[in-house]
Amino acid sequence: MKLFTNEEIRAIERYTIENEGISAQELIERVAEGVSDEISSRWRSNKPTIVFAGPGNNGADALGVSRMLFERGFRPEVYLFNIGGDKLSADCMAQRDRLLREAPEITFHEVQSSFSMPKITSSHLVIDGLFGSGLREELKGGFKSLVQYINEVDATVVSIDLPSGMFGDWNPQIVNRNTIHATLTLAIQFPRICFFISDNAELIGEWKVIDIGLSAAAIAGSAVNFCLVESRDVQHRLRHRKEFSSKADFGSAILYAGSYGMMGAAILAARGCLRGGVGKLTVNSPKCGYSVLQSSVPEALYRHNRGELNIVDIHPERTFSAIAIGPGIGTNELTVKAVGDFLASINQPVIIDADALNCIALKPSMLNSIPVLSIITPHAGEFDRIFGPQPSSEARLRKAIEMAKYYNILIVLKGHYTAIVRPDGKVYFNSSGCPAMATAGSGDVLTGLLLAMLAQGYPAELASLIAVYIHGLAGEMAAAENGEYGTTAGDIADYIGKAIKEIAGR
Image (tube, rainbow, N blue to C red):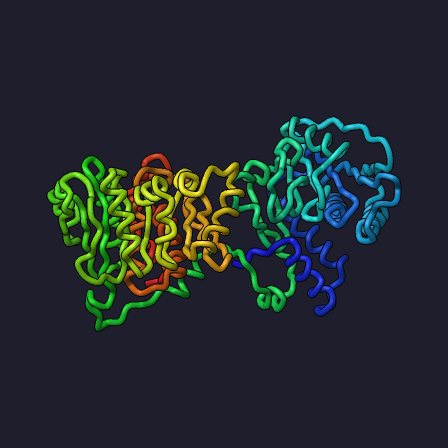
């Protein structure tokens, strides 16, 4: 699914109005109907309801919602802010006049000067139609005070389009207490980029998209830098296997993983790779890992490293379709040197995860040696150790976009909506996964799955997109069986094959 910026959405709205014979008022009616349907499906009409409408088109939407809810038996109290008496947009004015004409019994206040706060309790439903995506600057004065009051009373809040005080794209200076904390955000036509950044979760609450039928041609013809990866995106890219296939058709991979006391990471990564369909996997680990790997992952070949307890050299003895380094290797001085020497000598994309990233953090000059289109897979802590502390998730994502372009690599920034950041500036947020995946070893499984996809010949950009989605779906399926508390990384690995089967439909 394409994710659009505010300006891109406005362009699509203009195209719809100018080329498809749909007026702005008709679009407002569609918004109002969709929002009213959602509200009336969740709450009874006798729930005390207050609507706050701003002077622009978000306010027009809120006034349309007020009228439709009134028709459905709700009795909302409506506050329209028109400070000075001349601030309403033409569409907001038209919706105000229609509301007063068709629902004259409604309790309506047009605030032109002073404003007395209405009494709101935790039992109220508050509909936030103050500003939405039309906001141009941070809230000030009376609007800021109103938002703070709404947040303090802990009412149920439904925001139309966006919680007031937020911007649809980036929110670098946002102050949470000056921004509506929505229970439910009903986005118009598209989810917003800001929905996929953890900083904003408590402001947005649950979110849902209201489809208002904007131009399909304009949507299809618009190039974007942000997308949400869904099942159909992966299904279209997964290759079906031919009947006359052999293991040679599905690549050979080598995984450098493990150290004394951390062989579990190597096992989990190997299992993720094997479940992902690699033709042949070789695991290179210290000598101490021999019996552990041979007994736990007999399908993988074992190659002992020169080190007894740690990996001390990374020199593939032959050409492999794909290479991954990092899970459980530690940051021993000799291991750090081995990672640096390897990156300086290799000329094919590689997957760099976990302790290999921590080795790079100890010697950041290694970044300059990472091969073009390699994949690094940091969580927030690993990212900050390499690229410097970031004050927020949004800042971290923006830094990742900058660094992916600078080093010409892919950055899989792990989190709830894992972001696959490409060197061309495009960002793909992953839609699969669940809280059960916040467990030790989950990232090792992902590394193995990435390795499997890269070994099978998927380009690095596609391998990342496919592997991250499958990994998330496997986590969902494991959690359905074992619960959010009881799911382990091993469970996620076990469900990879079933996840691929579900996506591929075979």
